[in-house]
Image (cartoon, rainbow, N blue to C red; front, side, top):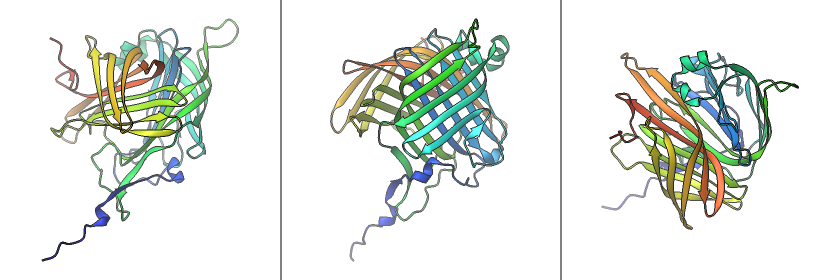
Length: 355
């Protein structure tokens, strides 16, 4: 008997092409989602925001979110499900994301209304928050230019076959750190008005994913994109998929003009009485070295997603979106701490129960 040669077609490779910056023909999955997300922060002002479009064309709508963190601690937020009929563009509900040059230059434009919350924690009950807080005009015009290589892409078999992800979170995903310039205006900005104009000259991160998505496909995750300078930035990710295994850890560190892959990381958080992150101690390891990072939440807004199963069960997901200040290697940075948890018996599953 002789040993057979290994099946090279079973090898998994990651593919990313310039055309992936644009929309893809949707597959047949009802929950197909093509998503673009971009954040932007100005450390000097301790302000910024994030913007997301998720085209769920097979369900006939897009998920549209705009979130602005203002220097006084207030947050402007809007979410909608505007109707769409095609997946041809990333444009819905007043938010437009345009690819000017793949891997190099994107723009974000928004014109519409947002809910201005002096106490962002009220968004835990969206109906009450939108009823009791003012709706104000908001315009956004931002330019994103890559300061790093691309990280990620579409995993597939070496022979081109796709990996089945019908009940997953996405079949492809990539990220990039960027410089960001432009203007965010919240409220009336005319003479005598009470509006706020943020002239942004900062940094951020963008990501894109496509494929089937349910927000309930993961048990919990911790996603920490952060920027210190255009030559030093990170993304740390810890994901629990409910498989009884150790949560998976991944990410990258931008050093100069190249990414070093994170081979392991930890995110240890302190929590308030609602189970929301307040501070973090993080550790990350690459082949080159180890890093210790601390984080302090500057401004937090709790969001949620709900889905009813075919059996009539309601599934609830909480996502705490926090603008966060980071310290590492004597440098001060800024970014997000995005913590997603499924809510079980009224409590986020990945957060220790209060004693």
